[in-house]
Image (tube, rainbow, N blue to C red):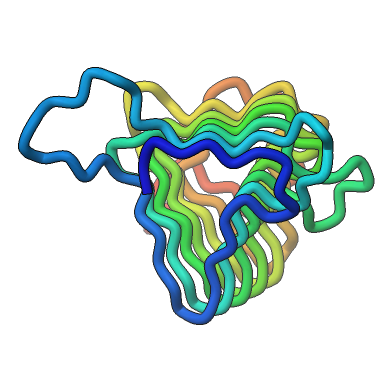
Length: 188
C-alpha cells in the first residue's frame, strides 16, 4: 500500500485472519518525486482504529510513512491509532506517526507483539499500551522513538513487557513495572 488517503472510516485498515499489509513504496525502477505516504485521518471523529491488526496478522512498515491523525473515540477503551490483538504483529520503524488519538496511540493486547524504532506517538489518551501477555520491543534508532504529550505515555500491565526503554524519548508519564532499559533482563 502506498500513496493513499483514508478519511472518516470506522477502521482505516482492518487486517485479520493471518493477513498481511505492507506500507511500502513499490516503484523500484524510477525515483518517485512525490510523497508516497499513507494517511489515515478522522476529522469527523468517526474512527475507532486507524489500523486494526488481529488474529495472527501483520502490519509491516517499510520506506513509506503511515500517518494517523485523530483516531479513536473520546471514551478511549480499546480504540487506537494502531490496535494489535490476538497474536497480531506490528513492525514499525521511523515511518509510523500517530498524533491526536482520542483513545490510545498504539494498543498491543492478547499475546501480540510490536516493534518500534524511531516511531512517533504524541497527543493521545495513552501513547503506548501493552496488556494481556503482550510485548513491545523499542529498538535503537536515529531518531529515538518519540512517545510524549500523551495522558499516559507508557502503560503495561503486570503480565506484559516493554524492552528498549532507553530508546524512548520524552516519555514523562510511565505506568509500567515491566519496562526494561535494554533488550533483555540484566544477566548475572
